[in-house]
Image 1 (cartoon, helix red, strand yellow):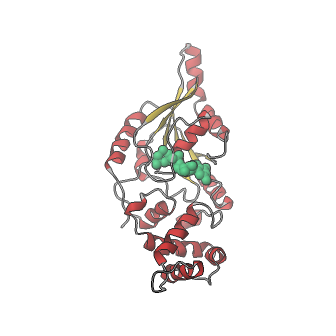
Image 2: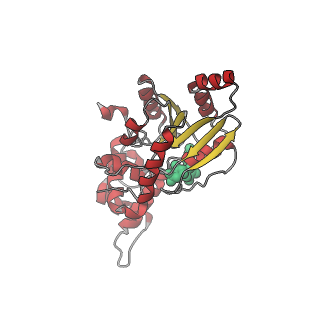
Image 3: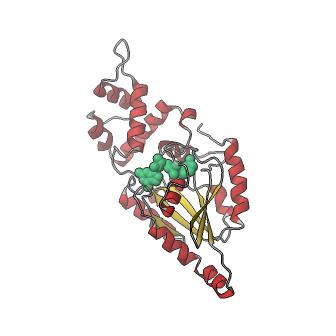
Amino acid sequence: MINWYPGHMAKAMREIEENLRIVDVVLYVLDARAPYSCINPNFENMLGRTPVIYALNKADLGESTRVKQWCEYFSVQNRRALTLNATASKNTAPVITAIKELCFNKIEKYREKGVRTSVKCIVLGVPNTGKSTVINNLCGSAKTITGNKAGVTRGKQWVRVNNYLEVLDTPGTLYPKLEEQKIARRLAYIGSIKDEILDTFELACNLSEELNAIDSNIISSRYNVEKCSGEECMSRIARARGYLLRGGDPDTERAAVTIIDDFRKGRLGKITLDSVEELS
Ligand SMILES: Nc1nc2c(ncn2[C@@H]2O[C@H](COP(=O)(O)OP(=O)(O)OP(=O)(O)O)[C@@H](O)[C@H]2O)c(=O)[nH]1
Ligand SMILES: [Mg+2]
């Protein structure tokens, strides 16, 4: 069972709930490689009437047709969605446009009353989706700490983007019980769950099966092995790469680390694991 809900996350969840009362808009950062898996069911009730922007970040790593389908999925539900690559500099103009549109009435009301205030936006999402990177991109400078592992941001942090916009960075949050293990595994593949608690070998075996279901050439062409999945696949990758243990047995653990790392870095191609069709 994959489950990760440390104390800092429970605290963050309480702080998010409190701050949702004072913000004007929510920027919900999802990973374009698994946007549906990134939806935290606990937020659905908490968000209330606050307008939400669903940002499918890491779009540079996602598969464009599926990413587009997910944007449409949100749009037909009248939910504002956009795609992002937050590591490309000055790439967040669509976020600013969406915030302005969704908060237009509020901005106008303040202006009419002569109140000098800024729009407040909270940034939410599961760990490692790029929340802090999006904020740095909005600011044009590294105002928040980022890092390529789950759980980098540990406490909330208000950041002023400009005269009219303040954003609240929050720690990535999951939910107390990740009952749906298919979702838990996808969160693990994309690096949203602390690696130290995962069984890398088992996870890699599952990933190979998921990748084969999308396109059986993904693994065979990257590692120059015959089509395979599961344990057999780790063994073949290890042999093809010359990852051998003393005695000549394949180092399947090393192959497992390799395939997960390659997936995360986009070396297996642009892949989106969640598909809209799975919902029906
Ligand atoms: N390829 C790619 N990498 C990204 C993108 N956005 C962020 N990253 C990388 O993803 C990793 C995580 O980014 P963070 O901004 O720290 O993620 P976070 O959501 O704040 O993570 P937590 O604070 O742990 O919840 C970093 O290595 C970023 O450089 C993107 O659009 N594309
Ligand atoms: Mg962060």
